[in-house]
Amino acid sequence: MTMPWNRLLESGRSLLRNILTPPSNLECEPWTTTESNVAIYRCLSRRSPPIPNEIILQILDHPSRWIRSQVINARMASDNEPMRVGIDLRNRGEQQILATNPLSQLEVPRIRRVVYTFRSRDQGWSSYPTHHGTYEGSFTWFEAGLTRPTATDLIDSERDDQLELKAAKERIRYELQRNRHAGREPETYRHELSRDHKLLQGAKTGDSVVLWARASFPGWENRLFNACIEVWCVDDLTGRVDDTA
Image (cartoon, rainbow, N blue to C red; front, side):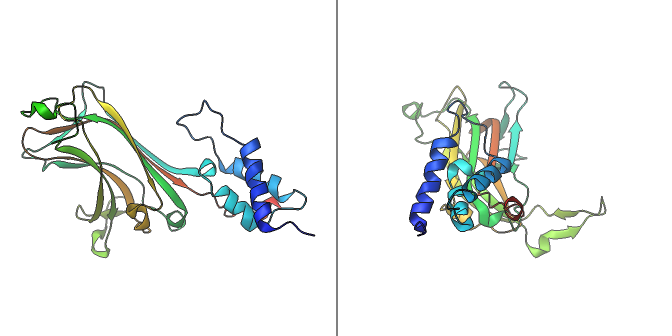
């Protein structure tokens, strides 16, 4: 008599929790690798009775087993020399800080979360003391977005025979975070967008995930010290499951 699938699934998840729980001292760096997921697959598929492939892949679609497919960093020279975004003759109060590589056809359906981490503050003063130290009346902020090339954006480049994108692209944006009003010290912010977020639901092949820095009105300045975008995907073991039987 075979074990019901729901019991097989719970059995696999229990094994995952009891044997392969990440060490508690690993806070930021990912510990999951495709190799460790292959090891889990081998362990579960060779149990008696063996757990079907479909159930194993459901088990691997757990946040503790996702893999980081892309990580893009931007670090300024020092805390005394942040990137500054404001209103001036050269800048209309917005600047693209980071952009991932274009998402591949295989990557898009596997994305489970995007993590934005950045350290920033505003200009450190304002004429509205009642708002100091709060997020009220703050006119510097960050946005998560996608840049999407259109057919007319692609032009042949004479340099290295590569495709280049014109400056104008379709932009999709969502506000992430405002800086603290008149903050004197930089603060670190971290935002996770799940696959239910509109940004990820709308992602298409060829899109790049982007971080924008924004500021409104003269005198307001968004000062950025470092930033990072991470793209996390489920590991479906494409091309490797057949080799693990």
